[in-house]
Length: 386
Image (cartoon, rainbow, N blue to C red; front, side, top):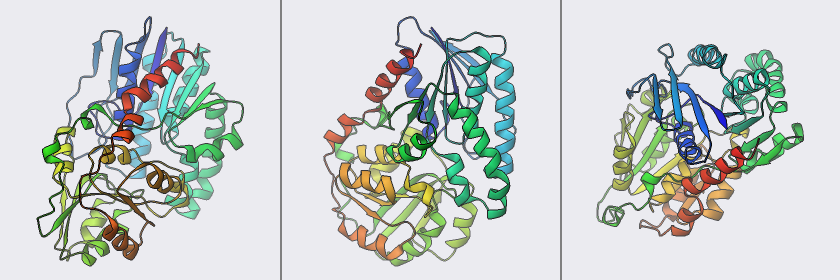
């Protein structure tokens, strides 16, 4: 069985899409009689992070081809150019090849659309893995005029894409209402995000909270974009906690400069560049509290950030500014984690004061959401879709 895997991100890139797809391919690799062809991009998630990778490599029954993209930052036009290049070059790479199934994982719709186009041209089943609802999100992050122009076009792309799928996996159950109301004929599954092997069996001695230090350290690591809305919460929140807490923000993104501008007079915050996963784990383990935030947009009430899973695996207290399904999930699944409404500085302070500054045993959570187990089940469902 020859499976084409389309993913805009793949190892060694630093983002949730890369970690998820890499883990899935590792499980597909173990499937008997399966040949996996991955078409992805050269590492590009952060312009400030350079991770070397080969344009083509083979690992047993897995072939990986990476497409070079034009240099870009995180702006909308840059992203459009990058996706256009990926779309066109991927079409060329697979044009003369035969597959039994096309798998596409997507957060911004167009990798999924690429999967639909390729699957139709090859007349094979399409399996979609959806990590966000792009058409639902744009109304919250773009201007009303842009939405008025783009939404009809993007809705047509979405209808074509999801109507083409034989199977759709949704990483968040918060997406269920949106998709089932529009695309009821597809089969659905809910293989969510999970905890990667690097975050399992972390050293206990480093997992203890630094309770004797006067200033406790809050750490955020990840994208600094409009979706995270750090610029709407951290400057004021850090000022409220100036005497007792120090904030470390690790990452890059389209709103980093705005955050930089707003913390010019904030003395208890540092901004650090993106780091690899080994260094990231060190940063997590040196933190007293791990911080998460999504902007106050209705579309984000449906999502489930992958960051929750790796944060929870450390045993550290978690402070999360989220609403909707993510808030419900954290409250029901993650011990010693407090939730506040996005952008609410006073609410963040109240939630912070409720946390127990101690290591929390989350072994049950870790067992339930170990990525290897989730991706093994997902790979079984892909292979079964013949």
